[in-house]
Every structure is written in C-alpha cells, then in structure tokens.
Image 1: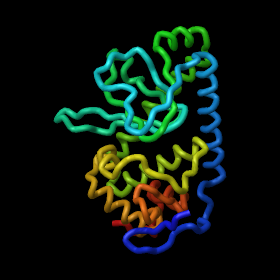
Image 2 (image 1 turned 120 degrees about the vertical axis):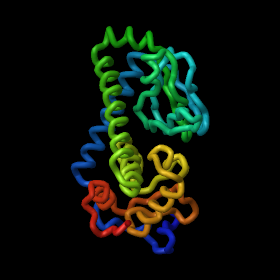
Image 3 (image 1 turned 90 degrees about the vertical axis):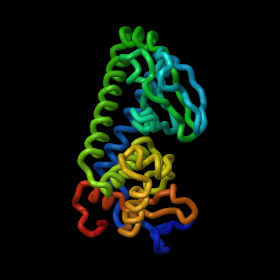
Image 4 (image 1 turned 180 degrees about the horizontal axis):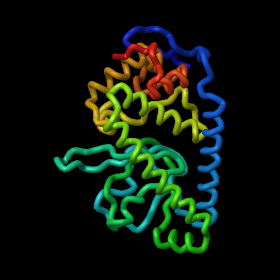
Length: 260
C-alpha cells in the first residue's frame, strides 16, 4: 500500500491503526441496515421487473437533458454525476448517485430529462420502462413502496444538499461532502477510510457552490489538522484516519482542528 501524506508537510498518517474505530458500533449497524435495504431493493427489482442490464464506463452518458423520458435507471454498481445547465450556460453538478439509487425521477413531470447523467467510473445500470414500472407497481405493492421510498430519499438528499450550501461555511461544506461520500461507500459495503474521489476539485466546488481554489485550500487545512490525508501520488485518493473525528468536526464539536 502506498504511503499517505498530509499536505504540505510529509507527515505520515497511514498506514497506521486509527486511534479510534473508523465508525461507532451504532454507525456500523446503520450501514449494515442500509446495505441490506439496498440489496433487498435490487433483488425485488430484478425479480419483478427483469430490467435490461448494461455496463457503462467513465464518461459515458445514459441520458441527456431534453431527451424524451420513457424509462428509469437503477444503479447496481458504480457512481454517477448529474449535470444541468445554469441560466448563464455553465455546467452545474446537481446530484451524485451511488449503488441502489435511481436515475430519471425528475423527468416524470415534464416528460423529458432535465439533466445529463454521466458515469464517473465503470458501472452496471439497470433500465426499466416507466409504463412497465407503473403496471408492476399496481400488481406488487411492495415495489410501489420501494419506488415511493426512493423518491422520498432523493427529495431528502436534495434538501440536505441545499441546506449545506445555504448555511455552512466553506470548511464545513467540504468536510460534510467527504463525510457523505464515505458514509455512502460504507453503507454499500465498500471501504470508507481510504477511497478515490471520482470528482475533480473543480467539480466538487461546482457541486458545493465554492471555487476550485477554495476547495483546495480547505482540503489542505483538513489535512494539516489530520482529519484527512492524501495519497502521495494522487490527491484524489483520500484517507480518513479517524472517522469519528471527521464526524465530530462536521457536527461542530471538533475544537482541536483550528482550521480557520
């Protein structure tokens, strides 16, 4: 495993055992429950809908803004970003999707997709026709409950994202983003203490309403505070040596970091 260093100093943060567990027992249970929920949902969709499956690779688009809507997509693996055009013609990252998430809900009302859905890495996408989904929901109440829950989760996620952008200072926005990404990985049974960010610094800033330079400065401050560390060969590879410490900072309880 490659050594991990914080920036700008070459202080070694890993590989070493974290001072505290990466996640509390309660958090581990929550991740296990969420992972089981996702697995059960995918199993139900596979059984009832027999979706069309395909593999896509980083940069591939499964739908574009303005295209006619007639089908929804579910991620069985991989990561996606949703891109919309702002009123002045700039691209805006408006959403991130992980395994178990649906793509295309927002197109139902208008009959056309409102953004681009772009793969961030190799992913398996399941596709179902919307009319077939409606028919199956009428025949299988459990499937209807799954769809309603997925819609509700998407609305809650959009609300939380808006709250973070509108109310949190820059350092807390970036820390919250890292915490959210790690949490999403852990809930899907993936390693959360070391991971590769699939977005560039500019894309993270775009998503959080910050400049690239601000994101870079905040990440450096988080690294100096030993809340994160970088792989010495790729600053997209992030280590979280003490997940509870990052969680405490996100919740406003960390007084040792001295980030500002």
